[in-house]
Length: 521
Ligand code: AMP
Ligand code: ZN
Image 1 (cartoon, helix red, strand yellow):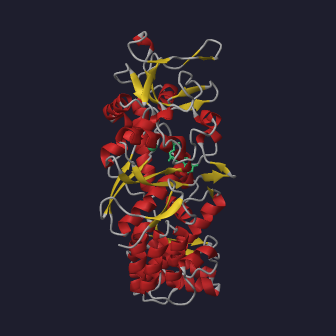
Image 2 (cartoon, rainbow, N blue to C red; image 1 turned 135 degrees about the vertical axis):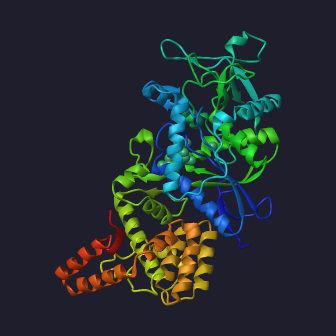
């Protein structure tokens, strides 16, 4: 197998990937909290994981991919009321439905959005609410090893000020007042190894990301493993600490280790997951097992809008439905994501999406041209106004080592593999694609290579070409003739042929970058 290099957040280095078990990769990705439509920022992170998984498959690995569904416990700070809320429950109250209905609806929508972007489904999508038992067991093990302590839960007094809770041992005081369990961070010596937020750094930094109402902790760096259910809460489970619900971090520790074991290969997420979520996951999992849990931590950079992180609370989110409504192919967003390195931040603009759509259309036109080149050249329509490939970055071409002039497909295949295996350098890989398209290697070989590359790119190249190849020969001929007339400036003649083509059930769409054929509706 070829060498694959990945930047590991844990070591802050680009490392050669070495699987635990030869030929097999266990991979865990933090999935969505299902209380609303996911946005394209979330999807950028899921796309990074998808591309990594496809690269591993392309290299011949078997991949066991787990992506969790957070349907309880991922608390958010409600800024208006300055308190921690469970967004699934909050949405249920808002809509007058049950939290289960909300979670189910948005889980299905999440699956649909991933499908629209050709994100390969994970092997397992474990739901947090279906793994409470595993989480409780993990917390018990942490408690037995002295890493967890129970308190009387957090409360705010009538004036909104913090009431200091008391940490203690069940049985020593009124048991009724207990019920919240925290991880005792000071006991875990390696805390901070992923994010650099070690204990000797200020607590202020840590406090900034903790929910404001957790006033009952021994130390502000401690985080909740189990939370006592507030009165009236519907989503709660019986536990050794009374009725309650799990903390967000313990969910991922429990589910990743259940499906992939105590030590697995790869864990992915967005850059904001590094701290506290993944740091806390390491603390929990490694405190329990005493060994390293994840070998490679891979994090995707943010999708930004006007330089700011795309986030619901910023009010700057777009969804895949928004993209479709504006007339874009969702795969144009996939293409846009491929034009940037996964670790760099990417500023989203509609102009950049349009440029990605144009590049994708050009690629489709080329591929369908190759696929039908033994027949009249219909799909290979000229692209007189094709913009310079604005998304093609010169540095990527250089990294990919592709120069102008003809090249054999074998050489392109080698360069493609080198690019994708070099820390997922997809801009360089796209550069190889462009050069292969323009190269003078035989059409059938070009197509074979492009279809192979599409196992990683996920742009539906074969499907689009197959659709085009289904166009009857007479229609293809008419399109060619029309294109010639257009080029000669005979627009009346071209319009006549357009009508003829429509009678045969096809529509010619003239775009800035050339003409395209689609089935008339
Ligand atoms: P959340 O629902 O906030 O937990 O986010 C789900 C996933 O999307 C996490 O892995 C986050 O790191 C990731 N994510 C959230 N916002 C963005 C963004 N603007 N750009 C890239 N990834 C994001
Ligand atoms: Zn997670």
